[in-house]
Amino acid sequence: MTSHGPVPHLPLHFTGPTVLVTLVGPDRAGVSTRLFGVLETFSIEVIDVEQLVVRGQLVLSVLVTDPEDTGLDDAVRALGDELGLAASLERGTGDNRPRRIGRAQVVVLGAPLLPRAMAAITEQIRTDGGNIDRIVRMARYPVTAIRMEVSGADPDVLQATLARTAFEQGVDVAVQENGIRRHAQRLVVMDVDSTLIQGEVIEMLAAHAGCEAEVAAVTERAMRGELDFAASLHERVARLAGVSATALDDVYDSLVYTPGARTMIRTLKRLGYRFALVSGGFTPIIARIAEELGIDYFRANDLEVVDGVITGRVLGTVVDRAGKAVALREFAASAGIPVKNTVAIGDGANDLDMLAAAGLGIAFNAKPTVRDQARTSVNVPYLDTIVYLMGITREEVEEADASDDPASPGAVS
Image (cartoon, rainbow, N blue to C red; front, side):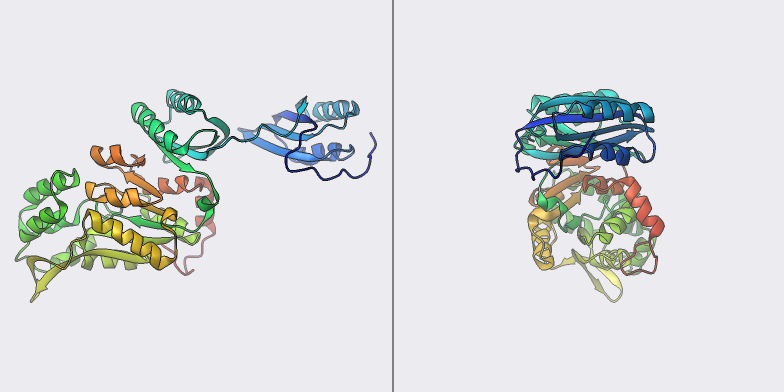
């Protein structure tokens, strides 16, 4: 084996002879170094590299220009024998098969994630003309999250067809078009009641007025889209007349955040994401939540309080379905973030315009009518699963938490 000097740099789309060198077997330190050490003695250039390790089993593939020197085959196989790895060489022409038009990231969430669900999802991708270029596990718990890089299929078509397949299989699927925008800073806009927190604030307040069941029934109809939200809010708030304003403090003190909420916010704020709350609830509570969690923007409804007593009236314009979408656009403009780089999360019918306006709208444990209309749906009770849709793995979250300085600015406990 002798070196034949430097190789001229390849054009963008190489069309000459190539050879795919693959090593398979038990993983050990230094395999890639040893392989490249063998390859460097030939007059070749590296075109592509892929490596995967699953439960200690290594698959390492390197695509190189073919030196037309049979010594390469013997050298690679000798290395394989020395390392206890199966070696293969496959010759062809040109670069890897070009990735076709239409590139998307498909994330599958399951608890549990069963083989039949993956079979149905991958078959639907094939039916839609897609090719799965890469598969990576994002998380193993509290849900299993698998990300697939897909080319050749229209992301909008995938979004529609995979949503149906996912529903049939009892899993969640999120589809995002790949592109440079996926790496940009984002604004995450969240509903509060039954999304960021468990339960509905107005029902908690109604408990102080002794009319919780009646108010809950109206809330449920409004969230299903059966009642105009603004009219239903006025009707429910009217029942709070005479309740002491101290009930607002009591409700705030009793709030329970959705599992994973703090983790999601903490993780994404590390990456420079901005956050906003848009709620049909009430400013005295939403403002305190925003302060506690380091939220950048919020909008909610103003309750009239006179002499320390809730009057049963709402002041100003109600934050309704249309108002939530308006708020998202205004917050995005204030943050200097394109609307295409916004993420909206909600569960009720009054969130639908906001979900549609955002670059990524996520129905979180939503009512059926909302889930059916949203482009992306998550139906596991962990809000931090959202970070997997952003391309962040569970391991990365845990590593960042382990090294986090609690005293750092913006840290969320």
